[in-house]
Length: 175
Image 1 (cartoon, one colour):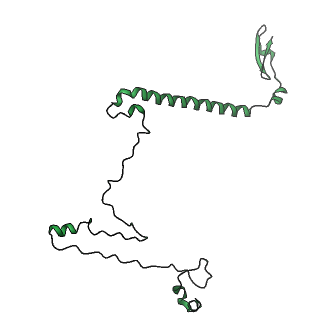
Image 2: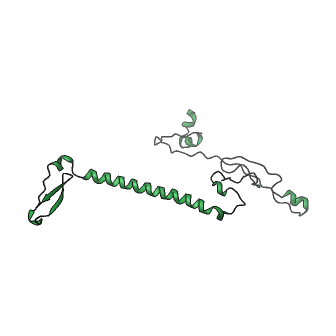
Image 3: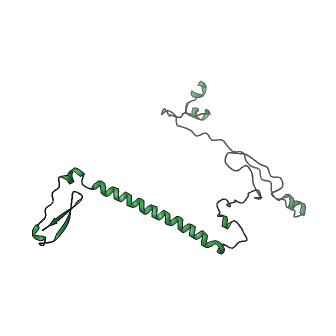
């Protein structure tokens, strides 16, 4: 290995590896491996039944494995099965001879029931969130206890009763 490193400017090309961290003296070189050439046989020149049969891709196929392409060719896709979604279908639609119009009301009513219940639950949740948010912004109980209320008796007609809210409780004033 020491003779390879002393070879001068050709040393990086003689090595089978390259360093991960460059030291500035030699560039990193990507190792290139030449690929094997694939030989393609020319088509037969005669047009007999035997020669045409020999030119079909079912005769003489060879699988080659390399890192750049597929290793085989499929000409028939009969081994691929169709997916079965019967586990996801409703029981009413499992029968292939029954008409869908016969049980459409039951299926739609169930769908509307689920959608309506979800809407009611969503509205209740939104109301609860808004109520909690508004109550958190309200004045505290000790602030409300110190609160004063000013009432102008001149605005209350004589002989009438007026109700005000003070400290969260009703206050009745009769003038």
